[in-house]
Image 1 (cartoon, rainbow, N blue to C red):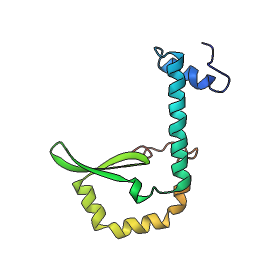
Image 2: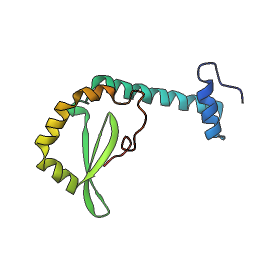
Image 3: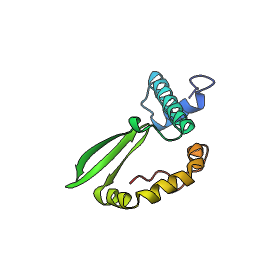
Image 4: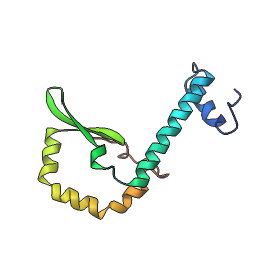
Length: 122
């Protein structure tokens, strides 16, 4: 399989191997979409925490239980009523935790090996 071009040849070859039915234009569009997503995530990391107005919430039901989903310039995550209640009970500890660990926000996503908890969402 010849590469698409010198810069993206390896990426295209990998995508073609993983998705043998994709055409070259589809692969190029997929690479561009992945590059945009990567840049979006880098911009988030460079800016630290998202602004409160950029974060939205949505209340829904999951298997008959109320849940709240947080969305914004990060991967959406959902928590249930029990976890939300615990956070409210210990909101001062959560604030203290964030204040004491702000330096780690700049390092999120920068060539760190994936840890078992890195992709865990509540």
